[in-house]
Image (cartoon, rainbow, N blue to C red; front, side, top):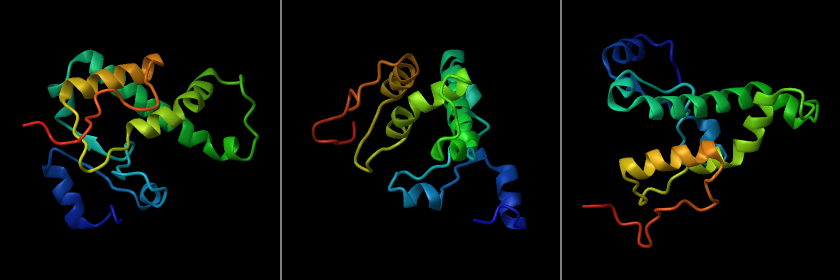
Length: 140
């Protein structure tokens, strides 16, 4: 919880990046409770192609846009149609949250993850994810 602690700062400076877990996300029963906006990987840009980088960046942008407007949205002060980017973030919100959830026994290959990322942005991601395995056994 404390990101201004010296040991945490030192470890973060030498590691690839960091995954930040959020009590708030966990309290919403969303697992894994990874805070996408506060998490970071220095190697990710070298491990994925430009299309995947762009898609991941767009998802982060939508999450950030929604979170910055969340209070106005929740109290009904946001006027739909007044900001196209906010409208898109609202439209994609439930799909993004579903996309970011995964049961511990569920496994997705790199190709499945990339495909789901693209489908999320193009609007063709169904409510239940394609590629979910019946028995959810990990691939060998």
